[in-house]
Amino acid sequence: MAPAEPQKEEFAEAAQDWDLEKLYADLGKAKKIWDPSKKRGLTDVEKEYLRGLVCDYSPNKMAATLAKDLSGVRKALTNTIYRYVEVLVERPANSLSNWRDVADWLEENYKIDKGHLPFMGCHRPPDISGFEGRARELEELKQWIVNDDCQLAAILGMGGIGKSSLAAKLAEEEAIKGEFEYVIWYSLRHAPLFCELVGELVQYLYQGKISKPPKTITGEAAKLASCASEVSQLMAFVRDRRCLLILDDLETVMGSGQLAGYYRPGYEDYGKFLKQVTEFSLRSCLLVASREKPIEILTLAGDSVRCQELGGLDEESAQAILAERGLSASKPNISALIQRYSCHPAALKIAASTIMELFGGNISLFLRKSTLIVGDALGQLLSEHFERLSELEREIIYWLAIESVESASISLSQVQERIWHSVSGTDLVGAMESLRRRSLVEQSPNPAEETPAEEPLFTLQPVLRKYVLNQFVRVVREDIRAMLDNGELEKLGCLRSHALVSDRSPAKIQEIQNRTILARVKSELPSVVGGSASIKEQLQQLLSSLADYSPLRLGYAPSNLRLLLAALEV
View 1 (tube, one colour):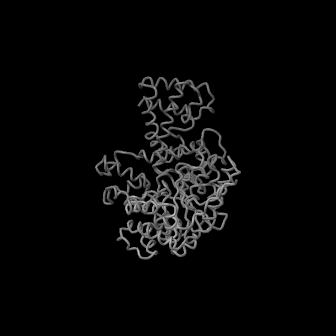
View 2 (tube, one colour; view 1 turned 30 degrees about the horizontal axis):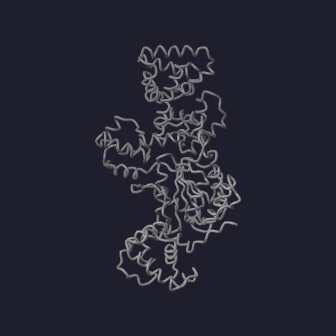
View 3 (cartoon, helix red, strand yellow; view 1 turned 60 degrees about the horizontal axis):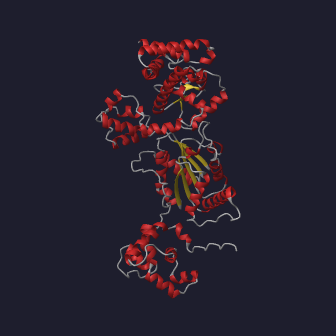
């Protein structure tokens, strides 16, 4: 015998306009208060009557729809739902005189505002109570999404720059609330598979009333059939209804150790979904926030696809962030502090906390006593960026950190000159463009003094440069340790691939490299090889051991060791 078909749930459309889960729970508590002898929670029949009432079904129409006796329906409503609602909204007993009162009395606390659904479990936007600035960016996003009928938009930027906060602020704008029936926020931080994402969205939007694949399909085929069915249902929903779906942290489903914008194995369907969103005529918009530019944004650029690359705040907004933390705009050197951190909001918050806690709010003293502070929270964000880089990207970004001091920039040809091994121009351009898609590299104006005017120049934000140099010094230290332990040439790593002080840099830059790189590596040596005498002896032995190898295999290692030996003499 074939299994019985599940019965259709009447008045299911109530879920589109009412927070039924919360209403069921609260009305169930009111029921227990009204009659303590009753079991807590609504029965299926009570839920059905409630849905009918909030869907504007009169008792007469409800009885006809349910094929029930009218007097029985009226009696049931009088003895159950009407009484529970009176208790819930704290009205006098028997004061509910008209069936329409149910929806009227419950609307304020349980009807979903146009433009909002209750958040999906843990998928909640960040708190934006301290949001500052971004007026231009907000207006641009609203123009694209509301007026230009953009179907796919992206907010891109490095970690901590404020992508999620901007997306959350956008969702709260009246122009968005008034335009969309549904605004849905979904965080991809834990990298769900695409079918998991779609399954959750469909279950949520349809309140569990979705079709399932035939029972004859099992195993992996059933999973694929179910996913395909749910994708179709999701696309049908966003085609027929005006929805804004916000996917935060898209970079978590993208691959590591390869160029930016491509997906992890098993996550390729995210890219197909982005493409699918632009191929159909939809009433909805998909907004993604990501540290990396998806390759689809590059290939699908057009009227229905827009991209906003987020930089630092304007100075007024940066001052407001600092003022909120006790550093008013009237304090000396406030502008110097803001410029040192390139108006990066997360970095400014960390610096402000340090200034207040350790320097008594004295910005000038902080600037004299300390270099850039990255902090654990921002360091973790930047670490997530860094771990995703390909080998060539990592090599390039180390060179950018070495050369881009005091707002200095470097061209592609200059990077190519410095790379110790052969690398094609095509590969170099691809890797640099990938770093830009990751929001890690900035293009700066070319003064045409030392490079051709048409050649672009690249640099790093100060906060990122500080982090990358920290990583570089740590890696060089460990490379020296590994080389001293086993003497394998391949262990030279960054000691071979990068100069601690670049002989191609101007004298002023070399002075800074001496202070910020060479001196720091020197200070790390005691933790690697022991006392000062031992350090010089072992480094000299290491340098002598390299004499047996071709210079083509050694890169910068000999010159770096000589620099360290010379520094130890000082």
